Image 1 (cartoon, rainbow, N blue to C red):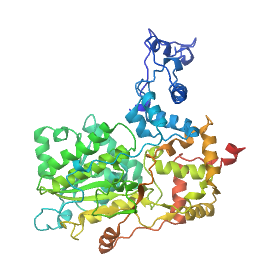
Image 2: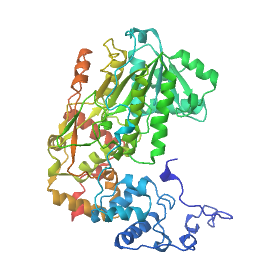
Image 3: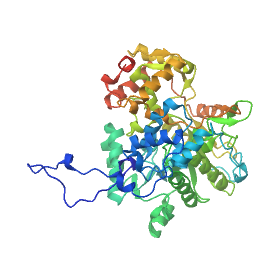
Image 4: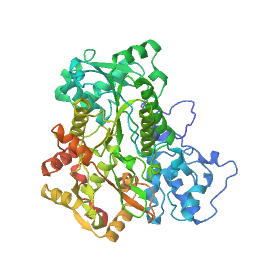
Length: 540
């Protein structure tokens, strides 16, 4: 279960209370007594900032203020990721520079208050001396091998197949090649692992589900395992057999949340990759799915820095986000392996959005920060004037998966000793002002607010108990940078040229596509019709 679904406290009872009709009586359940926790000597708030934090924690966690010690751990008191965002919304009016990352790292009122009172913290520049490579190394591979084997039924190990991109990579492999796909999926047993795959195939490809289901044990092979475990948690015979059957590995598995305990990300994104690299050795080809986020949002320097395919460390703020940090260090592991003879390509993926064909999005759309921001724009019908010139990236997942598999299976020289990193995002970005105009054309009134007016709206929402949830996902942001840091500009010109060779082009983000996006938000229940244009209900 996700941490926010696990009970924060347990109360022992002799029996469950029942009504006179014999039904479960929830109203008679005893409440957790925080006074029990307060029975030991507590250290209360010592200044105004700590007092405010105690008040907020008490409200969010449902604990008496007298029971909260300034040295108590937020998570041990029952806090989790959703509770963090709730506290950040409640502190919006204070103007504090506190992030989700701070809660995971500082954890106590004492430490968080100290950061607040000391003012905006400056991003701690990474110690580049711990990095063996500041730029991608050249490959040490032999002569290029033919990629025609994909049409001869070779074995491909695909990880992350139950994820949004992974399931579409599987679709492309099944529809455009003859290869056999071994899907490594974690489950209690093989039956549960297979069920997880079938549920995803049904969710994303109802029209092709029967065809895909018939391919199980013919072209789709389920491997029940855990990537972070030695030999993927398989016994030696199974591991050896899998190793013999595989020629190519596409590693798309990742923990992609942008907040949480770094240990979880290190295990899922770095340790797992190390096991993959052991499996690949020097006799297989690895296609590693990374993220454009490794570029960071900001980089140290007086001039704006450009992040190209052959860049890696440009003094960016990669440690500001646990997901980005884990993917950055995972790329570094790939570079170390490449320097020792491993043959690998890296695909840095951009902002994956709805399918271009029909507007379908991921299963857990509620956890997607980008879609939550888009929902807010439509829900409240507002944007900030200062953001109108900003560019919005839409990389439809079906186009991205198609581009990746075409590169993986093409005859272009993807074994190039230097140019083995690809930037997989739609460079045809849409200015926010143009997106607003398109939304207006399809019937959504969007009002442009001045910065101060927009901030006042956010504050008003943050103080409304019934609407605070609407802006919680907007709290997923990093540290505020000082003037020494400049925004990083992304570049994909070399990748665009490679894609042109195989006759691939990214799609235009037009009114038809955005109409599909909005229709899916409505049909999935993510954005209900009666939630649209509620600005006046908030401001009246």
